[in-house]
Image (cartoon, rainbow, N blue to C red; front, top):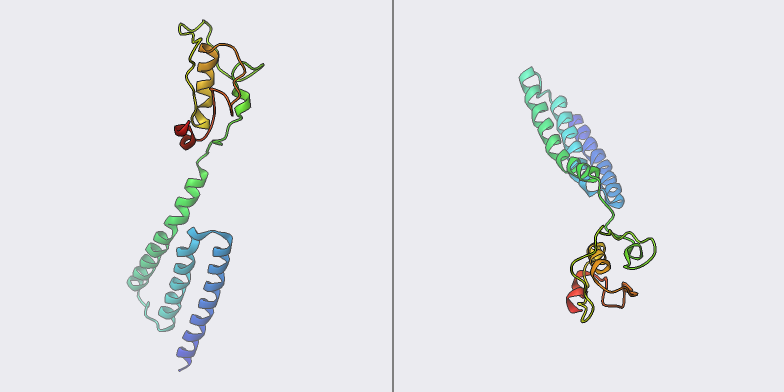
Length: 169
């Protein structure tokens, strides 16, 4: 009877602690730790029960128990490891300063060719519009082939908008 009371007490204590840890993990937005947060208490409870009832007397039994618990912890650790691996990959900010690439402005960042382009457009200039990431490319094209003018990136023949809006223009 005493072992049963101890067992229930440990189970209740681990459950309360596990639920508190799960709540903290959820509130912090660290959902990748959730499997690990439930696997560790289960492993501890199994270890407690096995030692209480002396089910792990031989080295072989302890070896099996620790192997199964190790595999369970390893499987539960996969998601946090994947998360931290993805977070360790450096990324580049997708937003660019559009005004720095506006054609025909002083000290813009547009790449210029050493020689004059063989194509020079004068009339019926094609409208260019597209993704923000492509603006430096077509700004360089405009500066090389279009007549010198003020091409505002928001309302001229050379626009910059998101890809879905570019299809409408």
